Length: 385
Image 1 (cartoon, rainbow, N blue to C red):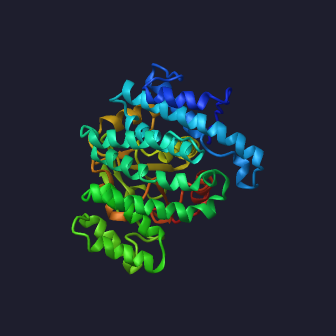
Image 2 (cartoon, helix red, strand yellow):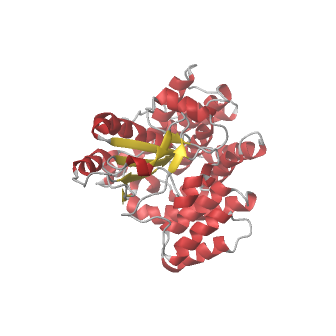
Image 3 (cartoon, helix red, strand yellow):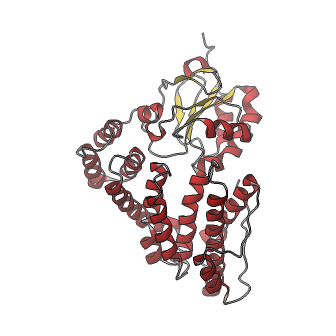
């Protein structure tokens, strides 16, 4: 499911300095397809190339390998950000333009970690321009601000961001993410998406920190009522759903289909909370489609709940382009989606599996999806009356 890395080789030692100068002047050495779909694919390939070598997860690289990767990472990161900025200017109404804004910042942060002296200034300028443009949806501006605030963390981390074991690094990353979310809330105090992001940090924290953060949300005048309800669940150590119990999900899908999980007993059902702007969600789609095409005939169903906000046009177009055959729920409320609030969905993708009895069995269905669906379909259960 992972794309093969695209490595841009540093041909001349002076290339990075020259490239940074050109970018500062609004010029570029890198081209981008005139076709928006192909252009977006090029950006995604470049962005995926920012990952550290796969085998570094199990071994420590030597200094020479780190130095070589550092040079490549600078070139790849700056060019990816450049391509994403071109995409924003060239295709301002494209469905991926908001994701492109985030990629600009995240790519340049990779360059910051790799030692690019100019990338931090570029991030600051880009974030300021996005915040100043009120035509950009608030959720996007809030996201760019939150992500951009992580730059100092990546600067301090340096090459550790690539070389250190992720399990060791994750605690520091989580703490920095928590602080960046709180900082963004000072500028966007009523933004539901940011409150839900803070709530996701609360759900991952432990002990006294978790209690204090939950109380902080409950005592915040500007926190949405739905978020406060979920914070109260966390504080009490309970959840708005139970594994082994039925889910109450019924709706009219975008295409007019009537969906009710109660009527799907006898099938194995994937309930997928996602959004078109969520890169990990989109990355999961090929695996979901493959499982659906292979097992739908045996009784596998998918029920998707979109946390996109605004108008449904972009979602309809995405469904058409990706040829997604399953029903989609959409209410345009983003993180205040009816079912997201009902079941405490703090982050996406969230993928649940419901068994043939109609009960929730797995809340991490993305782990070995096809195998788990097959197990549920193979189970012998009494005939549904």
